[in-house]
Length: 472
Ligand SMILES: Nc1ncnc2c1ncn2[C@@H]1O[C@H](COP(=O)(O)OP(=O)(O)O)[C@@H](O)[C@H]1O
Ligand SMILES: O=P(O)(O)O[C@H]1O[C@H](CO)[C@@H](O[C@H]2O[C@H](CO)[C@@H](O)[C@H](O)[C@H]2O)[C@H](O)[C@H]1O
Image (tube, rainbow, N blue to C red; front, side, top):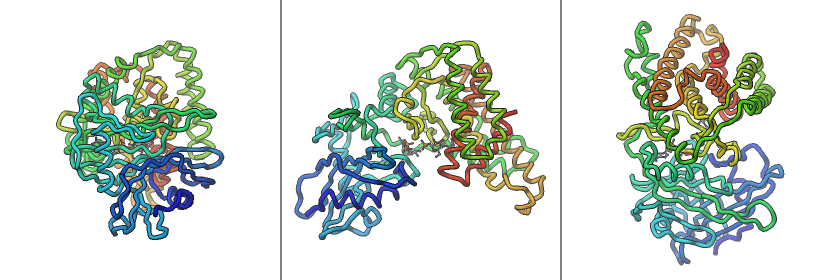
């Protein structure tokens, strides 16, 4: 007999905060309710059973929806022990995302375009989906759970569910329709009916996306940081382009691929102009973010005046600027180099923003700024501890100065290459839009200061350490 929902809900209060993808960490959970439960396997005497669950989690008066795959087994094999949520009356309830015997059902549902209660599974136009592949749940630090099926597909199971079409699916669908070669091939998606705003309101929401698994790809962050290590380890007289492992040619091609995706997005969703006077509101929002960040991270205050003056330049730009759909959370961890060039992933936008904010059109140089910040991160993150006085680390000041200057050299060299590739690919030339680019880079750096303070305090020195450069 399966435990009653009440017992599962109770167990989830302790289990959810331990999950990497749970967005409400650090806030007390005041209630969990299984809003919909959908059996995805038939009743089996002995075998495991799969139930899809949408749960509402209440914290500080805020209600969030999360998607779970619940597995039920009378005997839990040791290999699934770590995924257990509850054991009651001889039945184990566990996170079935880790059970390939059950996740295989997802591929079947997608291949057959099944409708199961509130859930609908759909194939992308022209796609054929092979079933019977074994899945492995990704171990990456992620906001969602990804299941790799064989070496053919990756199913992204969105964890926090927001009513509406997820921008990742929305943009991937539009880019696929345009034949864009800088995204993984889209095979299908899953959606469901979820409670919406207002009394009795219901809406559809995207809950999963099946894409081509890029099995031979290398991730941009790994490639870039390998190049940085080569430079740190090389003879100090060798310039960045001769130190081995030079990343600049890749950075340039990445710039060109970015411009190509921006062009496809502009054609698919259109471009509109933001009048010059509206830039005051944009600058005011950036200033608000800065004030909040300064209150949380006092070290930022030393740069506040210089940052404000850049935002003032933006407010007074005096000309309209074009805006369009963009990636929205663009960094080296979101791009992969494949045998067909750079491929862009995860068009969801910054995880902490609302759906409306993530769907809002923006200037494409915001993405360029995001990637330039990422180059800065790649160059600086190995300087861990180098924000402390050299003597405290038993080093002389010369070593610190040398590493700092090598970091600057790597970042400048690759920034230049990326911007060149972006302009050559038809994007707005970053060099010709310095006010916009500087404001976007600083806005991102301020976001990162808060992000690191909340999520990875040992990385806080990375965005803080680049502020002297960005503010001069
Ligand atoms: N199509 C793909 N092929 C290969 N690996 C992928 C693919 N999509 C995602 N990944 C891997 O999974 C990681 C997380 O994917 P992402 O879409 O960014 O998920 P999340 O929204 O949870 O952060 C990526 O950084 C990449 O390493
Ligand atoms: O990938 P996510 O959508 O979860 O994005 C969030 O986490 C990122 C870190 O994983 C964070 O990115 C920051 O760190 C990266 C190196 O780990 C660096 O390349 C990025 O430039 C930097 O912003 C991202 O900001 C955050 O939204």
